[in-house]
Amino acid sequence: MRIKGNEAGPGMVIEHLGSIWRVVRKQAVRTGKGGAYAQLELRNLENGSKLNERFRAAENLERLYIEGRSYQYLFGDGSTVTLMDTTTYDQSEFPAAMVGDALPFLQDGMDVTVEYAGDKPVAIRLPDTAVAVITETEAVVKGQTASSSFKPAVLDNGVRTMVPPHVETGTRVVVNTLDGAYVERAKS
Image 1: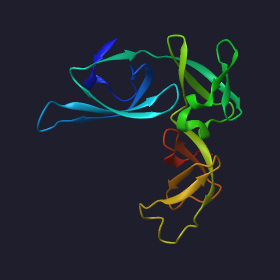
Image 2: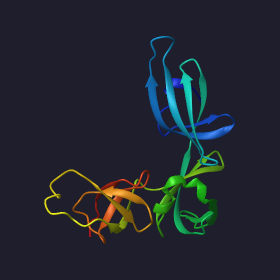
Image 3: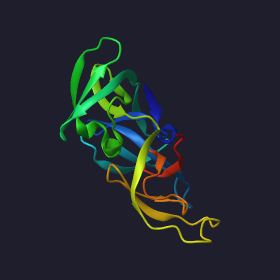
């Protein structure tokens, strides 16, 4: 389906420069001279590279429709991940690069969605949040718990994040799988 360049928004998948790209961010820019344009941050779904492009309203883009299929993560070896189709129970291997920056949050038995453009798998999408354990952080400073400051911490998957001062080593927390940001303490 053809769309105008300024209609593309975050989450959309487009075909551009012979590859398949997901729009990560959009910024509408109006200049004093000339027309307005959309500044898009794109992520290549085939190799994971990023690209910043400007599109004017007069330019046409090819929007691709994505079909999501449910899979369950079984195991990975660093370069590939093995998933099981939850409807047919068939096991398939996919390149680990299809998971992108969320790869450290992939956990045994996690339900994921494999996105297909036609018959071609283009991305593996994890749930929005995952539970992780704090393995390293600074000690609590008395009186600091009431402030809105954050302190650095390391999760059990090696990802660095910022957590509130009251969170201690060994605490289970919920984090955003897209950027590793702290969301809340995990329920027991």
